[in-house]
Image (cartoon, rainbow, N blue to C red; front, side):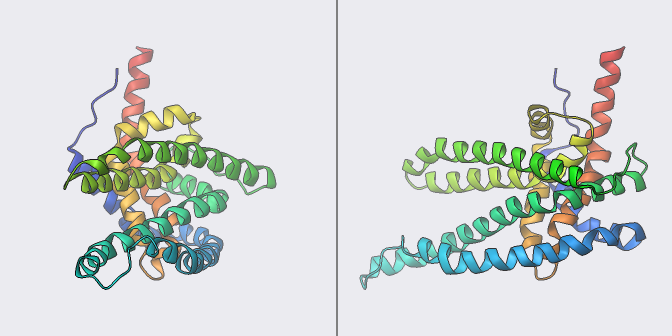
Length: 265
């Protein structure tokens, strides 16, 4: 039986959203964390620069071409209404692919970062030095989980496409659900590190984070916001990893311990 998660959905969402921002203070206080930012920082600069160039030169024109052109007044109104959605779709695309590429490439650095945070906060974990075998394992695991979750995200968005047929509110509901599913996708990757150290398989990870879905989406939204902030965007993956690890220790692991104790009783 699933144990009820304590706290309202709004409170959990807020705690998830604030965690990556609070991670900035934790990095400033704990000297041992700054070194984990150096290599991922430059990787993220290169990755974001390439994605921004590709998105602006290829994706944005493709999206803009979908808007009808012409001098008629109703077409002008349509273009005016479509512009915010176009920009939103553009930013979601940019952050989505930054999340996918960055999570896979920086996994070998963010996993030790998560372990270090857990150790500093008193968690029972151990740190491993980077080896080719460990790097390959982290990258392949993150890639596998990302593909599985991305397939689920695409299937979900296809299934709710019919909402666009509902007059007036259908398109808005579809946009909200689609954005919420993307936020869950963003947040999932950050909680993957502590869950993986406890040998959770993908199905169990998904079930656990679905119970804490509001908190997971809160972390995802914080990552989305941080990714759009100059300079902080290059550290968004690291800050998300730290924030999610702290949340895991404070909210998720105590419930897992109680469940384990109840099963052994």
